[in-house]
Length: 477
Ligand SMILES: Nc1ncnc2c1ncn2[C@@H]1O[C@H](COP(=O)(O)OP(=O)(O)OP(=O)(O)O)[C@@H](O)[C@H]1O
Ligand SMILES: [Mg+2]
Image 1 (cartoon, rainbow, N blue to C red):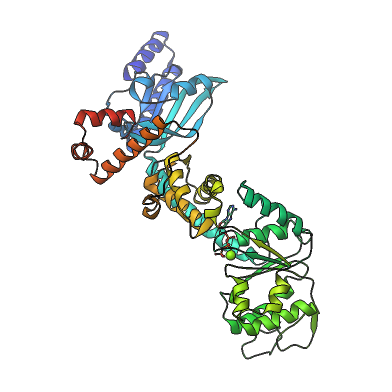
Image 2 (image 1 turned 120 degrees about the vertical axis):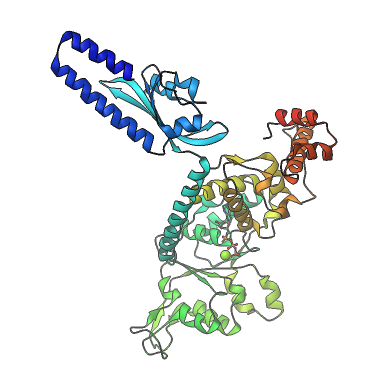
């Protein structure tokens, strides 16, 4: 560059134009300033001309690339997997692309320099020198966003139904039949009882029924009967008037039934309601009226009741722990959600939908789930049902580091230790299956030996070169 400026100065001297000379000095000053900036910032920066020849590079980048004099060389000779020359061709900026460089995955930004409509050069910058820096920052920001969403959600949660039938993932026969039936009954005003083990999607279904009903513009109020102490449940459900008891709020308080007027109330975990409250609830259902505690005014109600529980209500009725008359009032229509182990056909679809949902929520990019990992997901019995599946996916995504695909190593031990795993897959030949098992065994062995290839080869009864060949073949690093 120095030589370039000397030449330029000489040419201009020959022409003897003082003004131009000043301009060159000024340009050189700028160039020096720019170079100083490039050397002092701890960033990876590179600038090329329109031919892709490097004109400037920051010191930090030179040090990383171990090339003290990259200027004058073509960018492809100096930077592995660069696309700066492509940006020169297309004139289109590329931001946020992952670039593998010296075994390191960075996130790059490539910007064309355009003057008078022509591409005259390009700037490349490592936005994040290591994808894990990006992951850490992204996790931090997303945690904050998540918190904000949570508080926003808490504010709105009380009055609206968040989900509709499109959110109920699964195209297996069982869930499809349930969706069809629920869509039909959503249009009626009958009470609905939703049964199913914990985490099977009872609340999701209740929201969807409300949103598909004629009451969808009315409120949707949920109350968890198990979470509220029974002495408080009464005032929560029916409200109270001012002075009803010591500590009662001035002006009184509306109960959940009153709040749900014109809409739907979800009585979640109804199996946990005390006998005393059951009697009060029955009266409200029969009379379609509610009276606040300490009040003397009857408020007429137009509320659809959806009740749900993971308990066996019929059994509770037999044991005289749940009122039979209330049971019959509530189960005008009963929907039983099957446990996940009885609808394994939906696991792949659910796992992928949850992967997208969780990855959006956490702001972590995930490309997919490997077929081996899916095999473990399908073999497991899921006592916690879809909620457990969601938790397993969230845990795996948090463990990804720089991987983009969920692998068996990201799954909890209880899933990986499953002996019932089935390798049968209609799309794979026996050879494919055997190769996959071989790959997994080698990976597991390397994990166990902390990457010690000599030890791994010994355990597997392979020669060192034999193991190396397999590592290369299966692209195991
Ligand atoms: N079919 C589905 N498709 C997608 N996500 C689902 C589905 N069913 C349930 N989920 C998700 O699984 C989690 C548990 O669902 P939900 O809270 O509705 O279960 P539940 O039966 O009410 O559980 P509990 O008895 O423990 O209250 C939620 O995050 C929900 O979004
Ligand atoms: Mg629930």
